[in-house]
Image 1: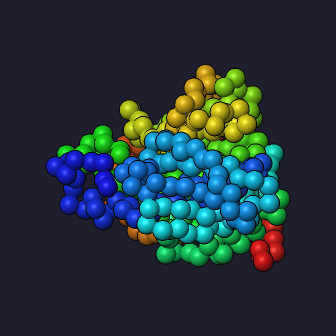
Image 2: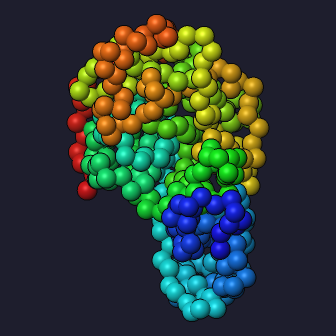
Image 3: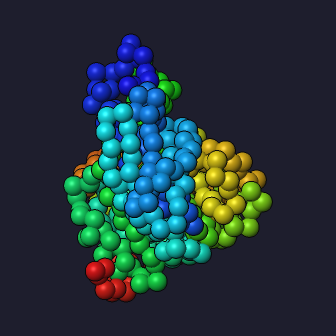
Length: 375
């Protein structure tokens, strides 16, 4: 049942709200001693379903803990040695669930980037990976794809692995609704109470895929972190006292070219005068955070950002009209008339321009290394 009062719901609220998902995923913990079930908040279902768990094949009743977090719940079931499955018993029946493997060993000791993809095209995703690989030393990529219709999961995986065979890549299909994203609209301004799919995604990433990573940077595909003196963002967070950086910045625009395919390296202009700030992103050392923290889109709830966060500034790629839509070239490329009308309002962001030239200048659009496709 939705938590929001009906008078504060827009007409499309119920279209975006997830009424039916109980768990998005069930998987082994990193030590293979327990099984995590991640999903939306149980809310009224916690009492109505009266969840109980038995291990298969032993049929032994299992103790479990429900950890309530913002917009998501994590149920951790302790199971005996030899368990291969989980039987979930409820007031409406029972079901068998095979826990999925924990993939943290794939990224153990790696410097990883994490993102959510919603319709970005392959060249843009490749640019984003190349930026963090060549500019910051990333050697692990975890990309969640939320029902994109531009590229298939296998195509994205193969394309990203072709950048450098030393980079481990995981592309995860995430078919769940991201949630009700109306916190910037009138009537519901400031209300973020139903971000279920998004919250479960980050919790699954933390527990199943990146628990053993050396460090993790989370940005959007249009988000480029620039550091002082070109120092690796991963180095900064790993050397920090708290193991957590949170950084914001401003928008970066492309106004001086009209290619058929806009690319990241062409967005190096900023507005003159006051800079329009963009939403913050973060970097973390997972091993230095307690299990009570929660990864989210713009913050890690429960962690204190380190004072060295000031060394990092984000550039969010956008257009003169404030949009970024890599599905449509026309949404990012300005016509000559628009460029002439608005050029005086912008100036080169020299720090970003030099960074982009350093990272992209030599290779341009050539594929760096051909790696075999994943079987």
